[in-house]
Length: 243
Picture 1 (tube, one colour):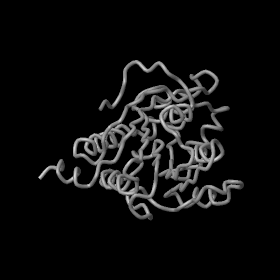
Picture 2: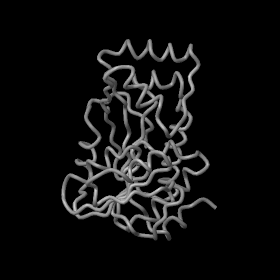
Picture 3: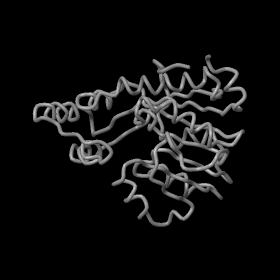
């Protein structure tokens, strides 16, 4: 497994990536850490016969999500990835869209074990994580440096493969385009997000605003790594786990 890729040539929405890698019709799907449920809506309204459970730990955002209209095939659940409130072998597909690094470091491996537990034997885990690079990251790191937690998320994934919790099917790298109308839009969507509180000192706020303004038309790219994983039977996990 590689934590990053120097030359990433493809730039596209994430929906294009998971559509290439997965068949989602007639599937029971779990999305862990759904945020504002933007991708949840896309998955739910495209294709056919898709049932989705979408979890979120941010109470404010969860309360907004349960009010979303016309998502009759989606159940929203207040829960963390480290304690998924369903029985074993439930889901065909589990998504974690850029959410593993938000799990507390000490709970990351437990979260991946939970993903293995709730997947059906032939199920698939799709886990995307932002790479610590790129022009958007340069702005973000001024007030919220995620280098350590992103590295820990990769190490947890690597450990899950090494110890036989999952088999690695593929690793895909792409650039996710990200556009803000202006700095006020960035401030509203990033600085004022409810899942984490940002209280920037005036000097840092000014640095963020200045660096943002240097990016043409508020357009950024976020390099992303996607790990596609398949759960291994418990007996194989026990055989490969270190003693």
